[in-house]
Length: 107
Length: 120
Image (tube, rainbow over all chains, first blue to last red; front, side):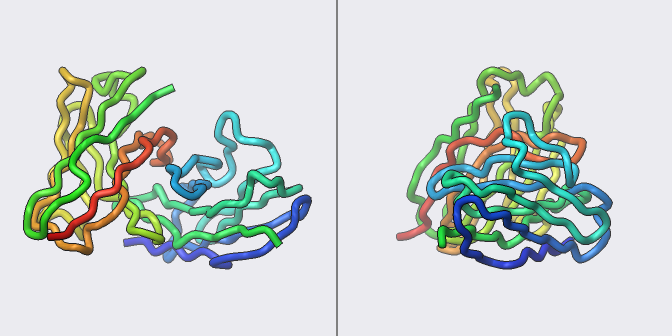
């Protein structure tokens, strides 16, 4: 299985900040990397697919980059509704695997 | 906008079979546009992909659960189902059904999730 490692596991930030979350794959996954946002008690929501493509309806303050084994999700000008847990997921090969999550908390 | 809704018992006894159904609306499973996935989340933990099925009934399972897992599809009812046998308390989780797009294998539509507790 491909292991996905996210860092940090949690971070504190203020409204208006820019935050970056990283995700590393245990082997190359080319650009088969997707990002999700999950709020408590809710299903995950797709933000980014194919490492850098913004899902329809997702604000442009979310952006993704990377290829191979190293990827990142950036949120610019953090908004109150962005405080949530973020997961990366590799779609290169089954079993599909997720990172452990990054919790973004209000400072 | 695809809508998915999980249904099934919220409590299952150890050693029994966990059975859930996902009802799909505003999309046809038979269209072949998606794989149809089951994903679970242990309380307070991360996400685990269990497996998916396509419209023809072809399946792909997580090897960690393959011996206990069965996913089936009923295109006449526009539903797909999960059966997990010989459950233990470690199978207690929120179970989600979701679409999985075959390109980058992302899941763009999810059910609301259903908590299944394994306990005697």
